[in-house]
Each structure stands twice: as structure tokens, then as C-alpha cells.
Amino acid sequence: MEELRAKLPAWVEASRALANEGQVASYIPELAKAPREALGITIMGRDGSTVSAGETELRFTMQSISKVFTLLLALIDNGEKGVFAKVGMEPTGDDFNSMLKLELVEPGKPFNPLINAGAIAISSLIRGSSPADKVARILSFFGEAAGVQAGGSLSVNGEVYRSESATAHRNRSLAYFLKDNEVLGEEIDVEDVLSVYFQHCSVEITCGQLARMALVLALGGADPVSGRQLIPRRYVRIAKAFMLMCGMYNASGEFAIQVGIPAKSGVSGGILALVPGRYGIGVIGPALGPKGNSTAGVHLLETISASLDWSIF
Image 1 (tube, rainbow, N blue to C red):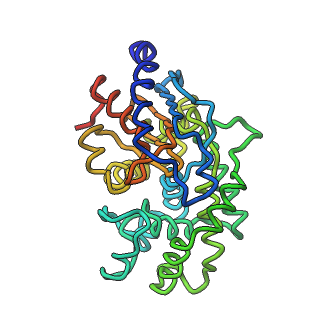
Image 2 (cartoon, one colour):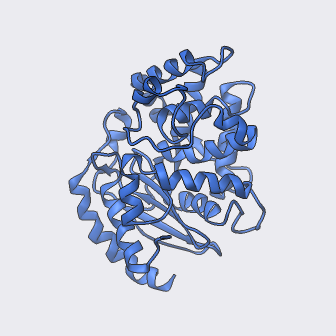
């Protein structure tokens, strides 16, 4: 950690220049308010110690990063057989909001749980008597992994949720297509599922909280403080495999080659990444490249991984 502590501020400032090559997401209007030039990172070691640099106080919504943890909760609720009856295990090579293969490939279920169609299907599998009940369970599960103190919780950013819901025409199309394909069962209300999906994407977080969530995954599902197993190790392995194959949208192959660690990005500019057994990492850099990943954040992770030999390959 000492080398990280010494070098991280300079690495952040060198990568910050890459923000000029990206644009803040604007298709969800509320996200367009984020500062384009911001860049922050927190790295948490297995003993819970942290190193941070840049704008780590900036709060942002998880967006697609949340899909990793709703997948884990759905696996806990339904088991592997129940989950993979609804989604596949393969990368697509298509945009994260594409519906192309839903129509072209039989059976017409989403290829994996990290694309939008797959994550919508996963949201339908979270147990609860109502959307509010399901979101409460999601917030509790996320909060435990993030190390939120007893009595507190993570929360949904209402402005982002309403902005996302109001402009989500493609996601509504995907959800109704899933309904027509019977991936969403007859008893399932599409708008209820979308409400859960939009809310878990709108959970607000910091780099430090994201790094702790990543560390839980790096430690095979164990809490870094208590050592208690929060998530079954088998399910964490599944999630990390998906992160490596599909976590950086259709730049996942390039990221695996250049950085070589499991990661998941979101269009708020957040990135959750981990070095197995060693570190959990939370990054925010709102300026995005053409494939939806933080330009400065990806460059920063490339720099650190190359310098410290983090690649798992």
C-alpha cells in the first residue's frame, strides 16, 4: 500500500487529462450535471486500510455496476438453475442496450445478466411482495457489502431515478420484448420490474463504499472486517467471471488484455474493480468514451495495473 500511497496522486493527475476525450452521459438528463473533469479513486486492502486520490467525495449513482450485486442477490434467492433459466452465460459483442439477439437467437432470453435485458430479467427474480419491498432488500444487501453502519443505509437518488424512468424508452421496449418471449412470466407486471431496475441503477454511492463492495468480492464474498461470509463463494465466482467477460460493455475484451482484472462500469462514470484476494477498487470519472466507459478511469486502471503487475493473466 505504501507504493500506492506515494504514487497514486500523480497517476490520477496524469489520467485526468483523458477526461477531455470523453463526454458526460446525457441520454439520462440528470447524469449530464456531473463534472466532466472529475476523477477519483479509492483502493481498499484486505485489512480494510484505504488509499485515495482525486475527487473521492463526489457522490454518483451505481448505474450498471449495480447489476453485479442484483445478480448475486438473485442467485441467493433462486439458485443457479432459477437464474440461468432466464439469462444466459455468454458475452454478446453488442451494445449494452441492444435487443438484436433477443430476436435472432433461440431461445429468446438475454445472453448474460450484465446487459440491460439480462439485468431487467434479473430484477424480476428478486424476492419481495412489492417493488418497494424488493428495493428495500436490495438497499440492505448493497449496504451490508458497502460497510454502511448499523441503522444507516444506502439510498436511491430520486432525481436520477425519475430522469431515468422518464427517458427509458429502449429499456421499456426490452422489457416488453422479454414479456412477449415469456422470460418475464404472465404474473409479472413489466412496470413493477422496471421500477426495481431503475431504482437499483440509481443507488447513490461513493468511491470508498464502492471499493468496499469490490473488496467483498475480492475476498470471495467475506466481510473484510468480521470475516463473515456475506455471499456464497460459488456465486461470487460466477459474478467475477461475468465481470471479466462482460463488465466493461463491448470493450470488455480490450480491458481484459490491457488491465486484466475483473471490473464493472456504469454510465455515471463509476468503475468497480478488484484484484482477487488483495484489493477492492472504486473509481469515478464521469467523462465517457464511445463504448460507455470512463476515459480517465480506464486509463488510470491501465496505469496502475501495468505499474504494479495486477493482471490475473
